[in-house]
Length: 170
Image (cartoon, rainbow, N blue to C red; front, side, top):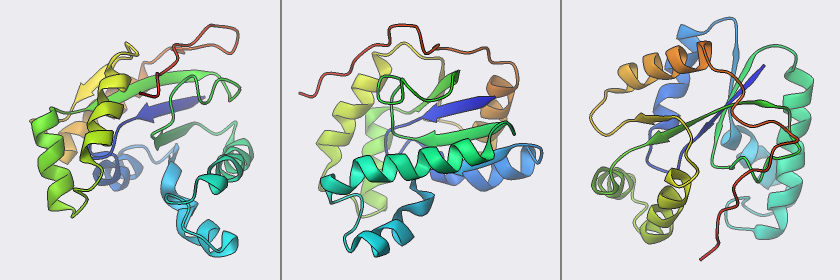
């Protein structure tokens, strides 16, 4: 089974990955961004800043996911159910935090340039109506524990034959 964990930048995905791996030794925990640096080297351009690489990068991640399955997998990233509609069926969970905390986290990471875009993405993700782990006041250990709990008892949130909400690109 695959568990998708969606979260806009600053939600805490990267901080919980090592904790999830420790708490779920029987599952593969994969960060969508894990292959970006070597893939960017192959492409001759940084993946995040080069839109022409996004679709091939998604195919690369899909190839990795297909190789891992049927082992239980937790995939953390910024892709929505609509964007991964033709991927394996699985449960979805949203990591979220208040806009104020997200702004603080991104500023601390020296990523202030695109904060308004990130806040817009976060609002769009909230509108999807997915189950949420609010990371605003939780430690990374508490967030990881909550994700383990939620993914351990999760039923598929979206099926391939189900209409998934589209995010507007405003």
